[in-house]
Image (tube, rainbow, N blue to C red):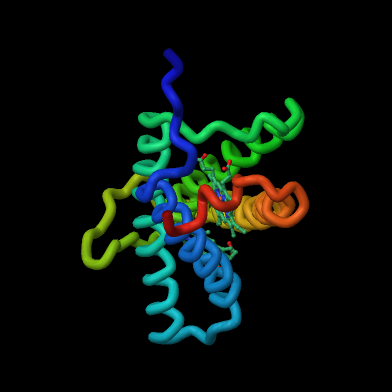
Length: 179
Ligand code: HEM
Ligand code: HEM
């Protein structure tokens, strides 16, 4: 007897995908606006929110990865070649890695810069002491990883649109909200 796998992502996976996609893209844009803000309370508030939401996204990324590993995934269409399957897996793996590495780097950047990370009042334990040299490394890392995320995301969105409008298979539909 063959047991049929799921035909689409479940509600948890779909909700996490779209909520996190919106929040990550917003953080990315806001991150680049920080430098343009004059020093003062507004800038501190924006940075504080960027950091707090970034840490929440880190927790969600770990939960999402656990959810994904614990449950069967909808199979890719049989029409996809081995190279296309490999690219999809590599792209998704890269996105999961970046969803973890970027916020971890952000926490280390803040703490090595001598700043605490407070998530809506909950102050995170110190993982790294103040160090100008480390701060520069983590700052560079945050920026470079942010650009790597943008590049992978362009490919990810292009692939999703190709499935929807050129190949016309169900890959986009199974990640979209609704039944
Ligand atoms: C920061 C933004 C985004 C991130 C981090 C992200 C991440 C991911 C990840 C990790 C997966 C694999 C899910 C899994 O198999 O566990 C996925 C699937 C998917 N994403 Fe995104 N995504 C983002 C934005 C978008 C956008 C803007 C679109 C649409 C234009 C999109 C369309 C899709 C689709 C259709 C799938 C399902 C692919 C499949 O069935 O194999 N994503 N996304
Ligand atoms: C998915 C989560 C995150 C994304 C996508 C993200 C993205 C970005 C981007 C694109 C920038 C602008 C480039 C740069 O200057 O590095 C930035 C700046 C910044 N991010 Fe994040 N970030 C995230 C999480 C975090 C976290 C968790 C923290 C700290 C707890 C953090 C702290 C900062 C700080 C302090 C800046 C300003 C750097 C400066 O200009 O001095 N970020 N972020």
